[in-house]
Each structure stands twice: as structure tokens, then as C-alpha cells.
Image 1 (tube, one colour):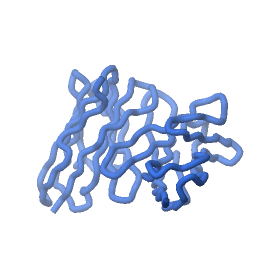
Image 2 (cartoon, rainbow over the protein chains, first blue to last red; image 1 turned 90 degrees about the vertical axis):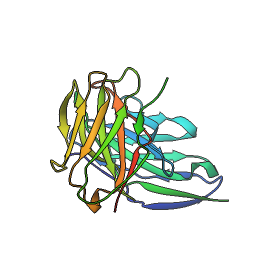
Image 3 (cartoon, chains in turn red, orange; image 1 turned 90 degrees about the horizontal axis):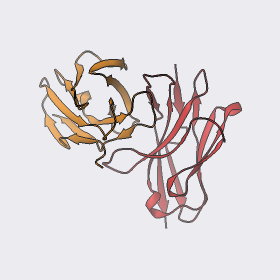
Image 4 (cartoon, rainbow over the protein chains, first blue to last red; image 1 turned 45 degrees about the vertical axis):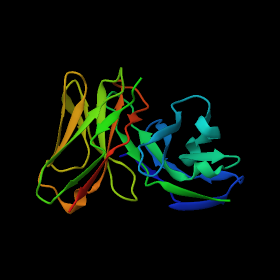
Length: 114
Length: 112
């Protein structure tokens, strides 16, 4: 069965500092991987996705993520965090095939201090 | 172009009651999935509808049921509500077999 682990429940960074959020997945084949962001009381917004090809993917809002098959990881990075990035971030893996089930991690809550 | 819309935004029910939540998918999308997000948790997959049939189901009891209409909109029904059903219920849509799913803002269900 597919699964996602986000080991950091809560991260605090200073505005302007770099950010890395960790994600490890378990899936038998090449996965589809996603990062979503959720602001309080809101739905999920897609930041970026990996299907195949280049292992470094660029997303919206200056985020990027790197797929490392050997480490079963898909970590999210941003070189300089803005106060508006404070939110909860979810990593997700999707099974291939027609009926695609999305499995989410438990999320990492990001706090940005001035 | 409207995205995924859900109604109502908030709902308060008491234990034992029944509730129906509604979802209109993004234009051009024919597959609808429902998720339950408890406070402080990631979304948990409930089920997915395509061509008006339930195609996949997560680990949820039969109290959770759904429906998809010919216009692709969908309903989530929960019977015999329990306190533990309090959560944000998210609807997501996509073209069949394609990713990513697009999410609505959810319905916040509170059980008293």
C-alpha cells in the first residue's frame, strides 16, 4: 500500500531564510508526487507535481522539489521564505492507473517569524 | 472558469442525524473524489465517483455513501453521525485518469 511520511509536524523559520520540508513515500512503482499548501479554513492548492522526467521540478510561488528515487524522497524547498508562506504543507502520492487514489501525509505546519 | 465549489461551507449537526454535502466539479472534469480532514491531520480518501458509480473506496464505514449525477456533480451522505465525524470534508475533481486533482474549499461539519 502506498504511504507518505512527513517527519516534521511543525517548522519555524525566519523571513528571508531558506526552507526545506521533508517527504518520504512508499510505493511499488514510479509514483506521481505532489505538494499542496493549505491556508487556515481553506482547501488545498497545488504547488507542484512530479510525474516523470527531470527530477527537479519547479512550482508556483518560488517553490521547487527534488525527486530522489534512491531515498524515496520528494523534499520541498524555497530559497527565501516570505511571511505569506505561513501555512500547512502536504505531500501526496498518487497510484497510477485510471482510478487514482491520492494518499496524503500528515502535513507540516510552517510558521514564519519576522 | 469556476473551480470546484462545495456547499454548504459550514454545518452543525447532532449525533445520530444524517447530513448531505454537495460538490460541483471544475468545468471539464468528470471524476469526483471526497476526502475527510480531521483537525491537525492530512486528508483521508473516502471514495471516488466516475460515470455515476463508486470506483474506489477508502477505509470508511457504510455510513458514508455518495452519488454522482449526470452533470458530474456529486453528493456525500453520512448517516448516524458520530462525534468523530466532525471534520473538514473536501471534494476534488479531475478528468478521468488524470492528475492533479483540484480541490474545493471544503465543508466544515461540526457534530454536537
